[in-house]
Amino acid sequence: MTPEGTGRALVVGGGYAGLVTARVLADRFDEVTVLEQDHVTAAPEHRRGTPQSRHPHALLARGADLLEGLFPGLRAELREAGAPVSDFGQFPMLYPAGWSPRVRTGLALQTFSRPLLEAAIRRRVLAHPRVRLLDRTRAERVVLNDARDRVIGVRTTGDALRPADLVVVTTGRNSRLPAGLSTAGLPAPDVLRVDGKLSYTSRVYRRDTASPPDWQASLQATLAPTARRGGTVVALEDDRWLVCLFGADGQSAPTDPAGFAAYADSLANPHIKDVVTRAEPLGSIYRYGGLGGQWRRYDRIRPWPGGLAVLGDALCVLNPLYGHGMTVAVQQAVLLARELDAHGPADACARFQRRSARTLLLPWYLSTSLDLGWRPEGASVQALLARRYLARLLRRIPDDPELYRRFLAVQHMTASPLTLLVPSARGPSARARRGGERS
Ligand SMILES: Cc1cc2nc3c(=O)[nH]c(=O)nc-3n(C[C@H](O)[C@H](O)[C@H](O)COP(=O)(O)OP(=O)(O)OC[C@H]3O[C@@H](n4cnc5c(N)ncnc54)[C@H](O)[C@@H]3O)c2cc1C
Image 1 (cartoon, rainbow, N blue to C red):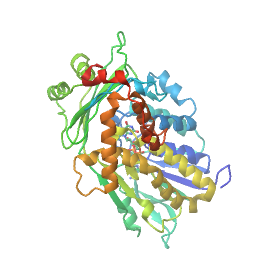
Image 2 (image 1 turned 120 degrees about the vertical axis):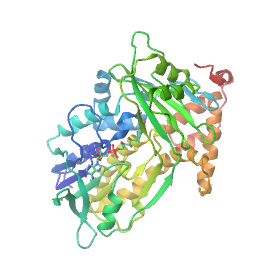
Image 3 (image 1 turned 180 degrees about the vertical axis):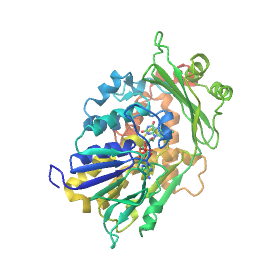
């Protein structure tokens, strides 16, 4: 590849992963076209194709740093738009074993609505002269050459063939690519699944800025095998709160206002119920169920066709409670760029699928191990050991600020999980925080 770019790239799906991918491809291709099935405007709006945008989206520190690298000034732009930032260690988190210690971590968390983030990224990506977005354009399938070893383009509704040297599929968690690839003659990928039968139920409220609390987000975790209910409240731009009630192992909060309030009232975290009881609701209640983890192992399909890459949720869907999805997607876009620079579009893609599988191992284990506690049958010994280790670690967190700091750095993907194996001194005063004293 020359630095000024060669060839045509197609990105299928204009959501979060599609947009960040288009950004990295713009430096490497003459023409980058993003195909998006929904109608898209410049405004921060919810779309049918991304129903998760009604629910809280935390961007982990590693993801925020990578995004800032691709879009310098993004963090400041979001702050200007009213999205607050503070240290993640300052947020009250209620685990079954007690409240998290309040620690300084250097891990900044900016809270915003998902539409605001996507609109800010989209505006910057589409300002690039080599990128265009075709909305209301649905891709039906990826097309390979006769030898089935190279992608030649994508068929869109109406059977138009859009030729391309590189096709990147970012069609999200409900991606129909596996069916499309079998039609093109490739085997279906193995699929790993861990389903904690999780649901999110969310509603927006007005945030009174006259007497703000000393936190910007507060959370109560669900945890197998007993804590099926949880929730979170986060500050959004435009002086709003977003309250989300979690239900695990098949539980879910009702979508009628009285049932929603009763569910919030059943939680031990007082911040969530306070907002639900006192603040003015600003809209309907939305539920998103079936939030299990799912990893399509495209890396195991050999040979893999040249010029085809799959990333974001179309590749791997992670339990949203741990907030890895957007971080992993931007990490993958950056990795794809590196592989393209080193090997060109024909050879980069198989390498990319294999290397992205390696980078997915940590977030996959972090976000699925604990869910095995709901239904451990059939899990591997490694996965069960990881679960036992993480569950023990979470029990120690209320009493151990140093361990908590390290745990957050691993969760935010800024430190190796090996750092958790170093013994830490228990904070003697921390025991006092147990049992809800922090509220
Ligand atoms: C309830 C919930 C809460 C979450 N919370 C967090 C969080 O706190 N932090 C975090 O990092 N992640 C979170 N996630 C995960 C995050 O939403 C995803 O990881 C992220 O959106 C992945 O981006 P994507 O582009 O792969 O998919 P999406 O953003 O879903 O985009 C897919 C796009 O493809 C389009 N599309 C689909 N099929 C076609 C087609 N055939 N032709 C053309 N276009 C098509 C869709 O319309 C859509 O625009 C959460 C997810 C859920 C469900």
